[in-house]
Image 1 (spheres, one colour):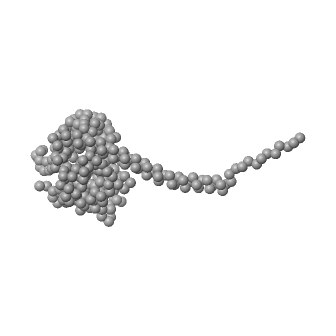
Image 2 (cartoon, rainbow, N blue to C red; image 1 turned 90 degrees about the vertical axis):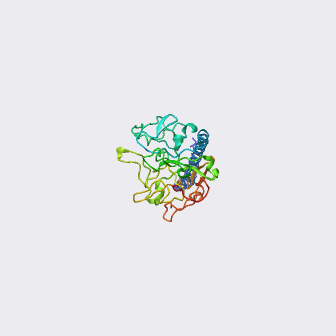
Image 3 (cartoon, one colour; image 1 turned 45 degrees about the horizontal axis):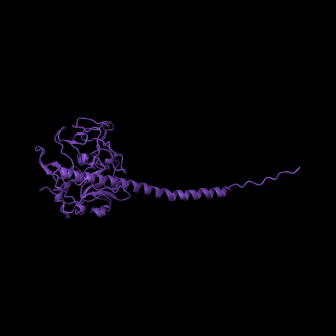
Length: 315
């Protein structure tokens, strides 16, 4: 009888397995940063697309409002004023985004609240509603849902806002919204941008995480160092600290906002003519101190409606 001779089975040695694992590890280390960059680029592209949608809405808003650009936000007079009809109903103190909602074609809130005393489904009062519509959120900062501490800020100093000179005179606006025809260089004047909030006034290591309004946790969402605080206000590079305007005066620390470099070191902006682009702080005219905080002494040519390097001051 013949005995069957079995051929030896070929298997990986321990060294070969270790080499294979090392190669896979190297490939993963190469691929992960590439995937991260691709994901960041995709988010930036979505953000730019949303801004272009805002641009279309802004142009339509101007067309139906006698050439007038939207104000940054209606002033606080009492718990019911000002109320404006927006897409979906009557809203108490809407921001520029909510005021353009009909023209944008997207309802920002499932149920707009007509008074500060009313509370939305997120437990927020009428002047701090959370956006229900994702189109009003930056895909890089999807938790920034509070309309006050929003991801997108408006060039309120030059395009117009409804802050009052005299609290007893409800129509004494400091700088009511300007006609778009007054903007000398629409393609070189910022309208909306990724907003950092008042954290811009602080050194990077002093900046704290985003805060929503949450009375249950005793959070007011007004921490000056927090990213996104007063995000709906977008201050230009040059700010007059005495006779001008910025997100916050008074107290121990005058604070200003700035464009947020949240997309791989760049920030997205919408220009008055409706086009959107990805910019750096330097290309927009901001100056960054050696310690990383945004100074008050930048170049305002890309924010000033006259396309000059001048700060806005009360006339």
